Image 1 (tube, one colour):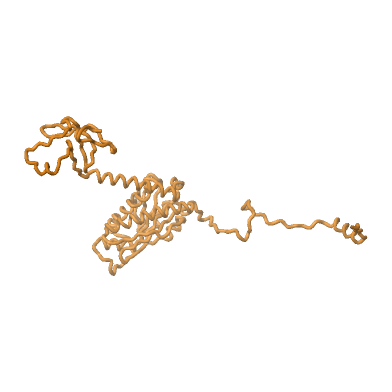
Image 2 (image 1 turned 180 degrees about the vertical axis):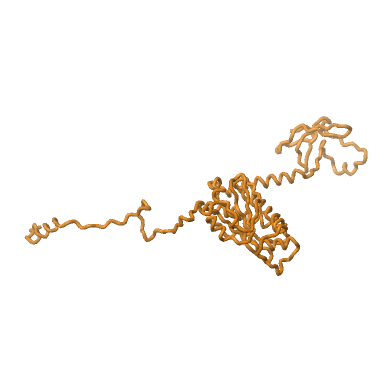
Length: 346
C-alpha cells in the first residue's frame, strides 16, 4: 500500500481546525430539588398551599377515617335502638382545614357542642345540623316526621335537654371507637347555637374535620366533628392504619373473651359423683328388685369421681357435713388421665 501525501490545501485545513475555538456544549438544566437526573416532562408537580399546611400524613388520615367509621356504625346502632327506627350514620369526608374555614362552613343557628377529651388537652367540637336535630326531637315526642317543618331558630331549653340524651350516646360511641388507640373519656361540655361565638383554637390552626351523613326515616342531614391538631398531637405517631387495626383487633378480642367468660360464669351446671362401676348381664339387670345389693371390687374408701356432663373433673372423698352427704375434692383429673372405677385410679 502506497503512502498518501497531503497537499498544501489539506495542510492549511488542518492548521485552521487546530487554531479554531472549541464548540460550546450547553449543559442540561440543573434540578436543584432532586439529586437524581430525571426527565422534566415526567415529573409530577403538585400545588401546595402554605396557608393550609397538612400536618397529618395520608396514612394517619386513613387511620382516622377507619376509626370514625367504627364510631358511625356504633352511633347509628345506638340511635336506632333509642328512637325505635332505622337510623343510618355514615362517614362522608375527612379532611384538614383551618378552624376559621370550619366555622365559616357551619350553619347558624345550629347545635355547636364542645367536647372534653381527657387525658388529652384542649377540646373538640361536634356540630349537629338542624335538619337532623328537629326530626330526632319530633321522633322523641311521638311524631312521625311527616310534613315536619324545620325552623331556623335556636333550640329551646326542653329541646336542648332532649338532644343532650342523643349527644351522650355519641360520646359513649366515640369513647368506644377511640379505645383502640388510647382510653379517652369523651364528655359533653357547653352547647352553643352560634358557632361564631366559640373559638377553641386560633383561626389559622389546623384541624381535622370529619363529616358524617345522618339519615332518619325520610329525613337527612350532616354531623361534623372538628378535632384540633394540638389536641391529638400526642397520638399522631400511633395513628397508622396498621397499628390501629392490630391494637383495635386485639383489644376487641380480649374484650369479647371477657364478656363471654362473664356471661358463662353465672351458668348452672349439674355435678355427678360416680362411686364405682361394674358390669352385669341383661338377665341380671331384669331380675334386679328393690333391696338388692350390687357388689363391686372398688374399696369403700377409694376416691369418688366428680364429673360434669359425663367427663370426670375431680377426685373427691365421700363423707358427711352437718348431717348432709358431702364430697371433699382431693385433686383435679388431668384431661388425658383415665380412671379405672372398677379398681384403683391409674
